[in-house]
Amino acid sequence: MQTWSGSVAPLTSGEPNILDLVVHTGRESRWGGFGDVDWTVLHHEMLCALIWLKAGYPPEGVCHVINHDKHEGYTGDIPSPVKALLGEGIVKLEKDLDARIFKSLNMPALSSDNAYRVKVCDKVALIIEASLFGPPGAGAPCLHSATLENIDPEYRAEVGAVLARVMPDLDKVVAARRGR
Image: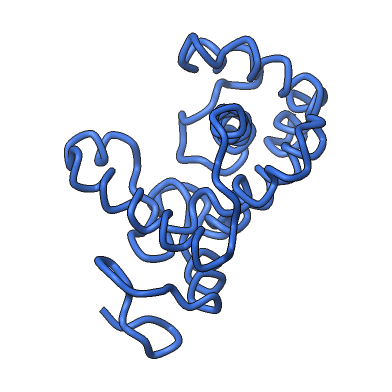
C-alpha cells in the first residue's frame, strides 16, 4: 500500500514516515467515518493530549497520549465492534505498528501508570466526542454522566473525575451545539 509520501506503508516492517503519520491521521475520520467526517484521529489525539495536561498528569507521558492512535494512519479508525470481529490479528498489528512508531520517534518506554492514564484520557475524549462528533446516538442525550455507565469499571472513577476537572461544562457545550 503506497502512502501519501510515496513510500510503502510499514505494515509488517520498516520505519514509518513522520509526514505520513501526520497527513494520514489528519485525514482519517473518527468513528470509522460514521460520525462527523471533519473530526479526525489527529483531532482526537490532540484532545487527548490537552486532557492529559489539564488533568495534571506527568508531562513526560504526553508523548504517548498524543501518539496513541498513530497506527490508525495506516490501519484506519476501526470501530470497536469491528475490532472485536477481527480479533487478535488487528490488535497484534496495531501493537507492532505502535512499537515501531514509538521507536522511530525516540519515545521512552511506556510505564504501566502512564498506560493507565492514556486509557483514561482516551475514554474521557470518547465521552466528549460521542455527543459532539459521533454518529447519531453515540452519546447520551446531554448528560455526560449517563455515558460513564459504559466505561469499564476499572477506569470509571478516574474518568469521571478527570472529565469533571477538564470539561465541567460539557453538558452546556453539547446543549449549545444542539441548539437547545
